[in-house]
Image 1 (spheres, helix red, strand yellow):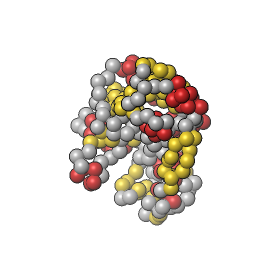
Image 2 (cartoon, rainbow, N blue to C red):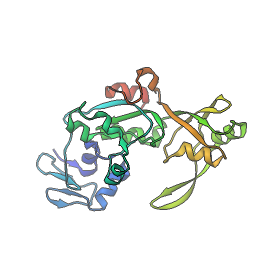
Image 3 (tube, rainbow, N blue to C red):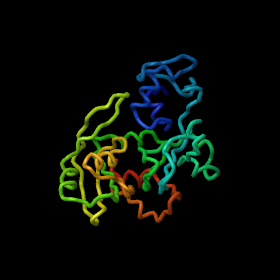
Length: 253
């Protein structure tokens, strides 16, 4: 049975976003049957032609895997490269080593990313379709964070977050000004708030707070949609295998 190249690549779980998938194809990093293909809509039979990406043979998983992780502080959400290894960086994927099948581990990607200093709820899977569904802004899926800040929480800070904050983001090496979507905010104490955002720009929460003259000291993602980390009773670094049905039902993807 034939399948379009972008559909095949998405289902391998190897790419964390459609943009990265498309860029890999357009950059000439993907070959099908020994020939570089730059058309994401190219149709082929994956049972008859091998797909290679940067020297790695890709295939469709026979079964998909889903994990809920309580990400600890001090680990990154990507595979470790040589430079990061020299700096003794640790990856969330190392938490699964020798605990899940090596082929499953190699196929996993994170659904979105949390920076090194952020803790909390993280989904890992090799189901590229689910990754794209959760990341799709049109799904309007809220991600809730609790955070402690260095200065007292003011009504001005809360109102600004609710309306949208002007932050700088870097896209293709170019710094652009961007206004965040309105967010939900609840004051927890004089120095802590809970924020729910419906998008996921890089280091967005930290940049919003900094743009408003404050600074994040601790950042923890507690939920995605109605999928609440607290319900799993996981210590930092612990994970639990979950079903796709349960994740979709709670997140609404």
